[in-house]
Length: 149
Image: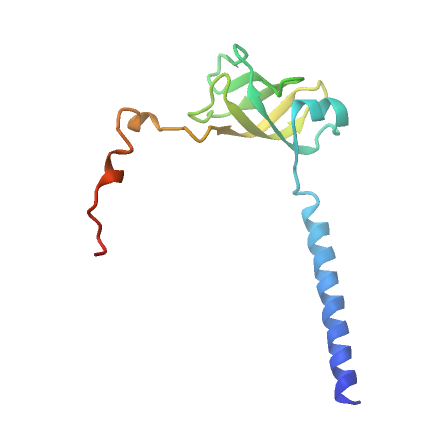
């Protein structure tokens, strides 16, 4: 066999192996994928009960209700046009408050409630931790001292 044919055969085999590996990875990950939905998307697309999804929006004002067990929380997530009832059992993040952004991973139950497995509280670019609220963060910006001279 000529060298040109050997290279062509090797390139074809490499391409087939790459396509096969990509298809295998995509098939293996299809159960792990969670799609991002807003409350409006849930109303429009009506995802299947039990399908893993990620819900994002704003925590409704006055909607946080804590159960007597101390770890179960029910609240509403809205996006301006629709709202979704969410139930979460666990310790909520420190930034989880009414009116803040939230992203929840979980599944829809048969009664239409979103059962969250994890909660992520979002904050804006102006966020300052409570411990640093009284500190002037711009004080050190005007010094001319540097380590490299």
